[in-house]
Image 1 (spheres, rainbow, N blue to C red):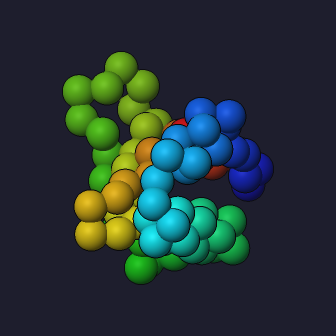
Image 2 (cartoon, helix red, strand yellow):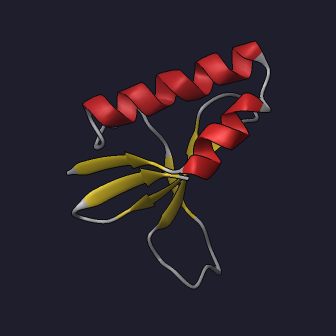
Length: 76
């Protein structure tokens, strides 16, 4: 599986606090190591035209948006 990071992901990351950045980076690392990690809570984004968008819980109130297909995982 191809692991990719969008430019908007890195831009959004800079707007977070240090603790929030740490949580997001840890989640991103976990995704890269094992995208099927059962500890990660994937939730499909409803009413989206593209059914491949998901959100993943990275902290109490932080979610990472990903575009997931069989061939790739893109951090948005």
